[in-house]
Length: 325
Image (cartoon, rainbow, N blue to C red; front, top):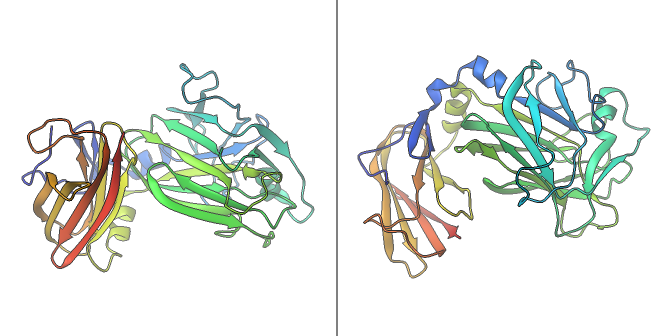
């Protein structure tokens, strides 16, 4: 099934062919889909009054157990409670991190120390600590990831997400409080199939013997007002991201407009031939997401390989690579 030029999706996220409007996300729902997670011994996490660089609320204390993505069912699938301490249908499992460390740093005290003293850690440049979070409500999330190694100000950690191509590098000496790009990274990630995949590990050039840590993570579902406000900050039509990428069946193309306008999004193969047109319509100002299901204009599945999403609005044109596996 394709969404054509007659099907512009305004402030919506596609879930297996259905558009879920952001207007359905109330502040109460956002609170119920926001989570604080600390990696450490169960019951030993920060108090609910502690918000680190995000929101205060109940912390999930998870020891973390190394598994592999192919294991089914996952032997260590942790159910998560929200900021109010209520059990949700959201679960987490982890693979990649091979050890749980506890390492005091005299310069860090109080609740900050509870979060940062312990971490799951990986000692390989090729293996990161990877989280699989399933059952999320679809929408836009702010993800705050803590990946700071105590007593090692020289260590730089790399943080990214399956559905956000931006890599952030963090590290350095403790500045006395949490600080962006020192103790934590922050991404905005769009969830359209209930899944989120954060990763943390060693940044290029770091010493594998020191290890790449993951102390904890905070997820916050943004309200429609917040999403609209951030969308209005774009100065010109922008192609934001393709996610997931690489993908096997369905991917989503996100773009933003500072004001209403005409948008065309076409899929090209590696030779530059137009495979499909997935958008050709007028859109309101703001953020929009459309999907491509790996088929051509006739609905026939295309071959695996490299494709490009080409975005055109007015005089602005940009493209990004997609990999269908």
